[in-house]
Length: 264
Image (cartoon, rainbow, N blue to C red; front, side, top):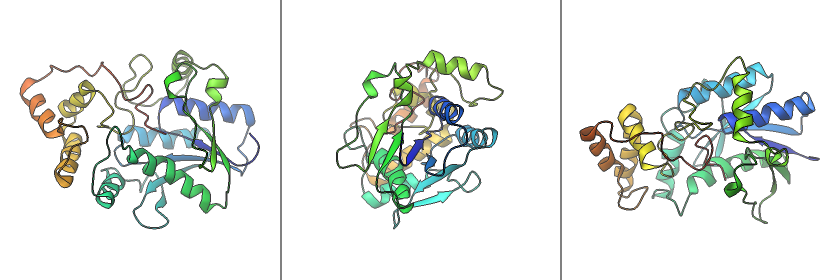
């Protein structure tokens, strides 16, 4: 598109595929184009390594951003300095004094959408196009931006008819990949590890296999005195998993439809 463009890289295989194809189609990215990755601090290290490797192998600068509670409410970080224990997310919860949930998903709004927008405004951008990693086979995710937003959505993979089969075939042909389990083109541990939008089976698998990571979600509920999901405290799920073993299978439902991505 003409004008300023921000390519939203979630850290998953689908948005990485989108970035690669844009580079292939356009060559070295113009200075009016920014690739951004918004880190919440709840990503697996494999995701962070994947973002770094994509930038190095494809010779593209990826701007790493994190939410901050004070002005300008974002910070540019790097692979080395990026939060790895939910620090940006915890700072947001402490500022809001309550937890995000299915209805009030301010975690996505603040740590992803607004964080990227604030960075764009810091560059002097008044208007821009935002490239979003949604495939043609994800019709339920085709929402538009608010008329009040300064950015207009661009979904190049929808326009190109890209499906998860195309994405999977691409990564099968590459010399590197995201080192997280790929199940039928989906990544159950992608991005925000214990996201409340993920299924009970997925969250239970995290509690079973990575109890130290799941403990962060329990601690946030204790900190706020509330729960991410009504009447479904994470502590109760952790206790249930501890006593029931492998009752849950993570090959169940997923957070949204792709890579665990919870972007706008």
